[in-house]
Amino acid sequence: MNLLFLGDIVGRPGREAVEAHLPTLRQKLATDLVVVNGENAAGGFGLTRAIANDLFALGVDVISTGNHWADQKEIFTLIESDERIIRPVNYPQGTPGRGATLISTASGARVLVINVMGRVFMDALNDPFAAVEAELAACPLGEAADAVIVDVHAEATSEKMAMGHFCDGRASLVVGTHTHVPTADAQILPGGTAYQSDAGACADYDSVIGMDKAEPLQRFTRKIPTQRYTPASGPATLCGVFVQTGANGLASRVEPVRLGGRLMAAVPSL
Ligand SMILES: [Fe+2]
Ligand SMILES: [Fe+2]
Image (cartoon, rainbow, N blue to C red; front, side, top):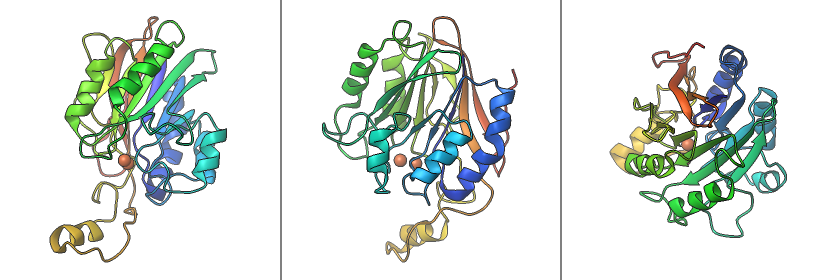
């Protein structure tokens, strides 16, 4: 299978990059499944119904999120009714929505997508490792799922890397989100799981992690907020990870994807 994962889409520039590049990328890479992280898609904060529908119309199959999943109030009904949208699995019991979803591809393959949030330098949620263990046990790779993707939404590289090894041999891809900067450590772990510490964001990189740089600079230098954060408005770089899996659902290939905007391009070819 050919799997494409795109990191946090930040505001309109991020959405425009996905709109500009995803249709051709899907063809070029013959993708079976596309997952995007949409937690910053609506003006940098959360996800709306209209934006989710636009992403699905572009060929996105699953939208994962993160700590910003609930920033737009309309998400609460949407996430209850649409199994293609997930939030981190380790929120307390009773939180609306789901943290994992099993999706069928056009060819009938079953792909489990899990969204989980780290706890280092982040809100103290339930144990992310125990939560992922439960999902993997309920839907094992090679038995109930033909591929497994884990979006680990976390601040600390160490926690993400530990999650990669925790899932090694049991997931097709473990990929980080949240830090909005692509890391150069794409690899296949010893057990066959593709891994990259952060997919990077679909965002304007003349920014502070996708946001217009004036207000972050103001807050770092003066320690006084003067306005809301808004997404930087220049052309965005689409950032993500491309994975090919073999018959066992484990990775045979992993490559970073970067396209458009300011970052150096990286486009896999089949
Ligand atoms: Fe984000
Ligand atoms: Fe985040």
